[in-house]
Amino acid sequence: MTDQQCRDFQAEVWQAYADWGRDLPWRTEVADPYAILVSEIMLQQTQVSRVITKFQEFLSHFPTMQCLADAPQMEVLRVWQGLGYNRRARFLHQTAQIVSYEYGGTLPASQDELRRLPGIGPNTAGSIATFVYNQPTVFIETNIRTVFLHRFFSGSHSVADSQILPIIADTLDQTNPRQWYWALMDYGAHIKQTVGNVSRRSQHYVPQSPFQGSRRQVRGKVVRLLAESRHTYAQLHARVSDPRLVDVLADLEKERLIARQGKYYLSS
Image (cartoon, rainbow, N blue to C red; front, side, top):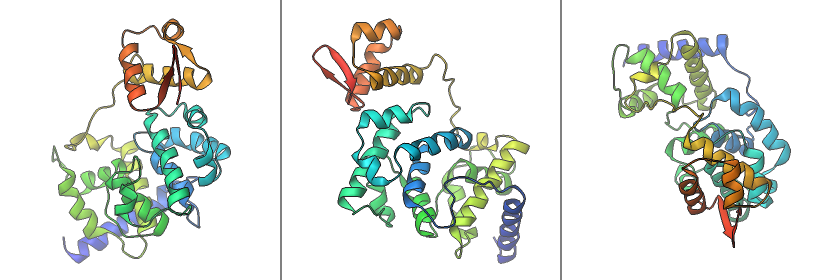
């Protein structure tokens, strides 16, 4: 890519941001590390429209990192209900405890340290480092992937992220990476709305399975019931009559989202 091509692409993205940029509650003039952490964990596998309401509800219940760290896991899971993938709630709770008690309440700036926190992989570590500390990291997520597939891989199929990441690095706005990534994400969201889901041409594309009748739905019902009160297996089976219940209970117990005391299952 020539310098001129890079400048042209950057101008295109910034113009798209001016035209279609979104006003999201975790994007503040002064970066709020806690709010960014919560939003980034929530946005894993969940659409922005669903996250906005839950994000605001979550922060009203747990307004600071310390409040979240000190909350019982059962209460965290109860407030999380509706987002799914409840392991994220447990990881977020554990991360808040580690940051509060091992890092003095300050999120680490190092991507290596961030990746050692529960539930934070390389892309989430990169996004947190950028959005909290304005570091020019290189990472990818679904809307960023959409922009580069649309702009640089038109007509290509089974495109690997390893092909996209060098172009992300080459075109990265080094002086203002935080807003640059906001612009990329919002441009990608606009492309999805107007062009369609070009992410289907990614090697990493996995269609979202229907929620209704899924194992995820069974897990969600069990976690919600146990967040309200303890239940025996018979009581759970009466509310969740599904042949997968035994396996779901075993998995949730293994993941330490629930526990057993005698004949009762309860939120851990």
